Length: 122
Figure 1: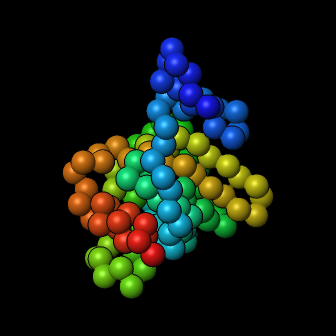
Figure 2 (figure 1 turned 180 degrees about the vertical axis):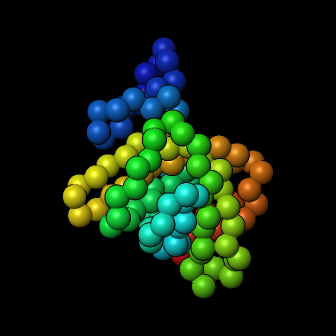
């Protein structure tokens, strides 16, 4: 639901978003975060952000910027590429670890745009 006075939206978790988020699309890309070992995957992706999931806990600082290296599925036919992101939220359920990232440099990443277009179409 949107407020007419302020451009805000309340999401399903009761949190306020300043702007509506872009549609998210399912993804299976592998992810590597600068400075961290272990395996992680994208759960979903959009042109403005994505959710990364892993079975390994990672100490992620909210608000901190990270360089993420994405390795898309082989069917995408894109080489691995990097994206500059900012950590927006972290969720640790014990067996699963998730992080929400927003894209820091949206306009500059052509590979990300191609990847989002691919997952949107499939």
